[in-house]
Length: 183
Image 1 (cartoon, rainbow, N blue to C red):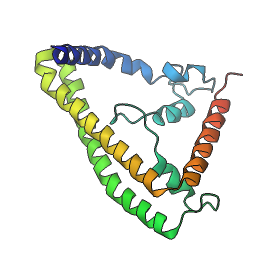
Image 2 (image 1 turned 135 degrees about the vertical axis):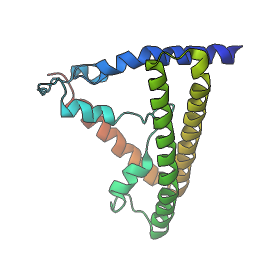
Image 3 (image 1 turned 60 degrees about the vertical axis):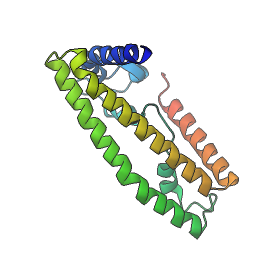
Image 4 (image 1 turned 90 degrees about the vertical axis):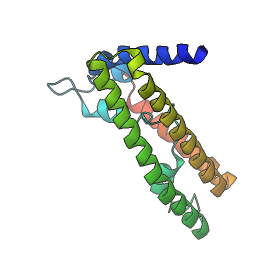
């Protein structure tokens, strides 16, 4: 019973969310409303758009940190001090992870597009149910896969290396917050 209610509410939220998406692309909508950057004539600004794109992946159920992306940028940092063995393991992990994650993203994007198109054609919730269930299943699988990858990276790094990366991430977040403060 609870599962049916949950699925119905997810489908209803999807129907409500589609018109709101058109408004979300404008500068000043949502998270970026504090951004006071001069916008282009069409109401969009590159800074807002880029910052929105850095949000969580729509292929996941929630935002998860991406240590692999950060490691790729700083792998030769002397303070991080990655050994040759660690670099090899991280490269193998990345080579295994990326194609699978991209496959998840493509499938989720295609299914989301199908759901949106069906909403525009006024299909009922009952007709959409199978697609919504499949989308939920794919997002769950993608999130669990990402969590497995994060655990794999954590297993490769030492405690000092993890602490250094955590400090870098905090510094970067503080820098981003400072840059977007309303003046």
